[in-house]
Length: 483
Image 1: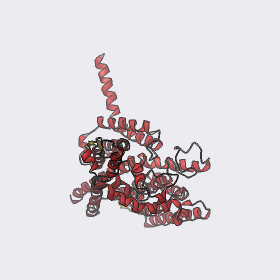
Image 2 (image 1 turned 120 degrees about the horizontal axis):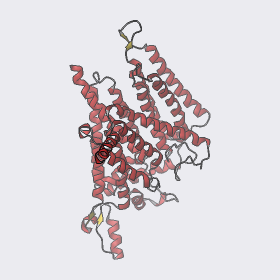
Image 3 (image 1 turned 135 degrees about the vertical axis):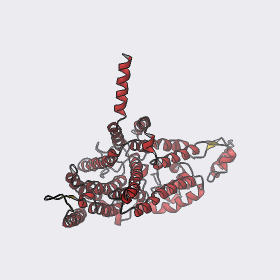
Image 4 (image 1 turned 90 degrees about the vertical axis):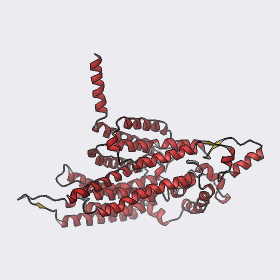
């Protein structure tokens, strides 16, 4: 009896840790993220369920961990763990003498002296609860990366397809939002851009930036299958059709960031389609076994027709006055004026708290100390709307060093890709896709904070891991080509 129970338990454990089960776990986690983690606010109620679930999925990933499969692929995970370690250090209590000597703490010491209060031991961060919240938020990208690292080679390419499918759901959700009430149930968050096509997000900029990145992924995915592969034609033309749907939706969203980033995304997608495997992969001849290439005319026709259709859709969107993005791009509203006035203030804040920072998540509270009287208004600023400046304000020099190390890791990949360009076959286009997606998110962070959204930071983390895998494949192809 006991022996039968043990066998059944072992069989169940093997099924739960199998390749298909790992892929289903990865897909389920990303799906939960997009439906529950589309807002950057720390008071969203769904986070109460999402973060414990992230811990459970992370524990599952660790139980299925294959150390040999993870070797050489963990650098993006190390970056996330380094940020977690920095946040932990910011939460360690410091003696009054050390704490008051830190930059930006004098005002608190003066207040305590005037009130006759003895200085207590305090952590480095000026908002311990917000820093602790930031630490918990890292469970999401860390779990997403661990789940991806457990995927076998066959399912890694499908991981990008899962992200594309979720982007499609968000796009359709946005289309239905436009047909309903601006305060309808299709808006998943209380604080959101009501009336805008935000999809599964709370902010239209985050939706538009993600859709721009999806255009690049679609261009790569549609043309990454050889002609002889199963459903390759359906995947190819469906991907192109999806791009034609996303383009006018970005116009309608009203996001200037999405509109600006859409241009390089379309160019990259066109290049990936034009040189993709589906377009130039050799296929068997009808009369004999000698391979022949697809006709150049078909490639040219698809490329030119794609450009023409995109331009036509953009023109129609503007003509029918549905392109709020163009109005916001060439206009200058109160929000844009405020963001330009914030830059010198944010720059001074970096210097005031350098080199240790004010603590992750503390910006909302710290900004009130530096907010000039001329910018006071009934609303408040919860984020700097510029992560390039907010990140060093909160993390100081250690955070800058972590970001520089991550940037160097990506930059090193580009010369290696150039060295192995001829021998890397179609893997080089996968690497181009991942680098471009990363750039879209990073550039989008100049005027907003997309990487503070749980679902988007998870996408970035997974794409970074995909880049590492692609570059490993590129380097593996080099000795094979020489042989």
